[in-house]
Structure formats: C-alpha cells, structure tokens
Amino acid sequence: MDTMGEEEIPIDTFDAMLRDLVTWDLVVPDEGDDAQAWHLVERAQQRLGELMIARGPWPAERTVYLERLCADCGRRQLTWLRDGTYVCDPCWQKRLTRAQDEPTMVALAAG
Image (cartoon, rainbow, N blue to C red; front, side, top):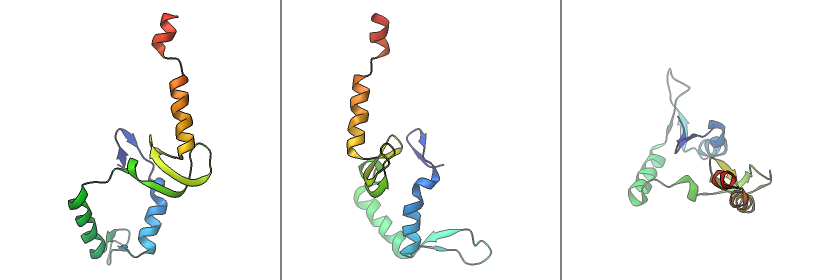
C-alpha cells in the first residue's frame, strides 16, 4: 500500500517517475520465469543507500514537481504534493484562504 500519513496515494500518481526510472535504465526487469518483477540496478541501489544515510527519508511534501498538472487549476506547472494531491502555489494559497474564511462549527453553534 502506498501511503502518505493516513491517505492512500493512487499508484498512477507515480507513472512519470516510474517511466523515468525505466528510461534512464535505473530499473530493469528480472530475468527468468518472473518477467513481471523489476529491480533497481546496483548503481541506483548504492546511490539510494548513500542518500538515506546522509539525510534520512526525503519527505514528499518538500519535493517540487516540474510539469505536473495542478489538481485545482489543471495547468501544467511547478507543483507540490499537498494533502495527497499535486497543487501549484497559487491554488494552495486559495485553499488556505478558503479554509480560513469558512465558518467553524463552533461559531455556527454560538450564533
């Protein structure tokens, strides 16, 4: 299961990254009977190990994604993975503004 916190991330979210791994020959299909299995090439495994030792796991929320479609405006531009979707900065700011402007249940009950 691919998760980020409590939310499940759809597997097709990773299509671009997976295509890049194959294009750059960083993952290759296993040989033999199980042609559906893939593995990282040794060079990529070694580099991952170095990155993990140096920094620990990199949080997806701190990664900038280039040329992704924004979930809100639909434009292909720089996005961030926020609340399980790819959102550009202007749309993220709109979401934050809307969240601040929405009346809370406490305010509704008191009124």
